[in-house]
Length: 373
Ligand SMILES: [Zn+2]
Image (cartoon, rainbow, N blue to C red; front, side, top):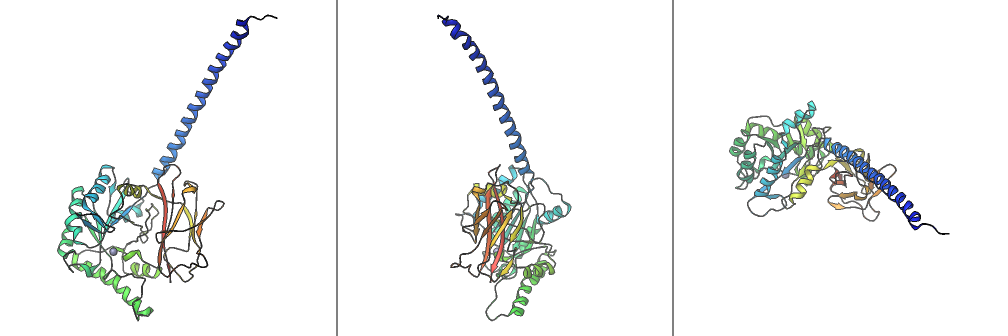
């Protein structure tokens, strides 16, 4: 048998060429489709992420022209942060505007609130000029015993001047005491009378000194319990800020507004991370926020809803220290139970649960306070 080599090879070669082109076409079609589809799903999930309105409330303390430290931020760094908010179209609003916005379910795009605690002189000499430059409102939380105490503290005159220029004043008690702690020889009645004074009298003093209503309260050290919270409400405050380091949503309650403490030594990148951080969708936390608990072995955790977070990046911290947690993928319960040899010590803990968002790589976080008595 003699077969024409040309025939033998050229025909299938032609066929091969055709099927190659066809296959190439199909592959390209599939690739295009996959890219297109991924883009759609990526875009929608990113949009969904962006559409979740979040309201960061930033908390600063002291400012310096020298090097930053934990509660003291270099003023150039602070200005850089304010400039970022201005150039990235954040709507810096006051706490009053936030409360009104939450009531009416109407907030400007990218809302954010600035607060400054304690009443350091540098609030007036360093931060205030920067806030004025950007026309940003802010709320100062002042503990009244500190005012005019030494040359590191604000004067009443400075406070009054600031209130005429977009600055609101809130109470941070009289003495900046931890409202959860009993003094020596105190019983429940004397303790209650003392913390009541801290909450009620500070409001009265501030109101008489600045001549307008004081609507907001900030817990010193972020320490509270249901009893303390009720006293603040009884005193007539309209909003309370804590130090649970997560952002607020449109469902935020005026008496449980979370704040992000901006530490002096943390990086600019972590500042931007804070602005983009979203809360987890949760259906439950245990034990409840603000609890005073006797059981030093209590199970602590949350049920995380949805699947918009990357399970591999889940992390849980108690009072700033990482703990070994359990995660049940079936009911999405994340929890930590203290080891029988290592009970929780008697103090307050901020519980933090974090993970990266699946689609955006920004952080999801939930944060609340428990106290072991
Ligand atoms: Zn403070």
